[in-house]
Length: 126
Image 1 (cartoon, rainbow, N blue to C red):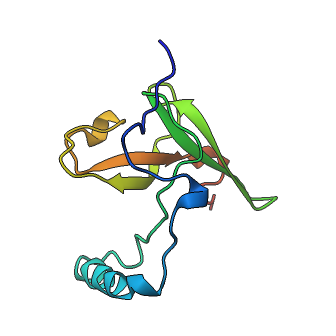
Image 2: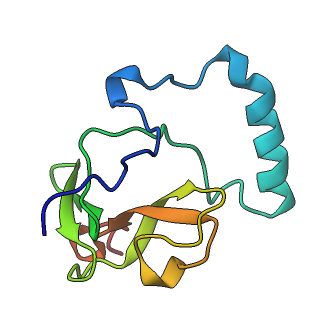
């Protein structure tokens, strides 16, 4: 199976080209805060800048790991079907799409972008 871009046609810009949040987004952010508060999610969810550093092949997922001692965060690619990391940490909202990379989100209006490695301190060990 050859490497194919999972994000081909997704329209995600490279990080260098992605436009960050700015003053022109003030009303959008206020509207989002209202919705998050309405559903009790203001302390649960936030924003991230959607971008692409490199394409993912079908069946691949980004995994974030942390080293609490050195206070570093790392991201790497794994096969979604073989990863032991199961706690989703980033999603991308989708319209008109009835599938995602992870089976548990099939049919949802979002796509799982990254999972967290709970064994590396993400979330922090108690």
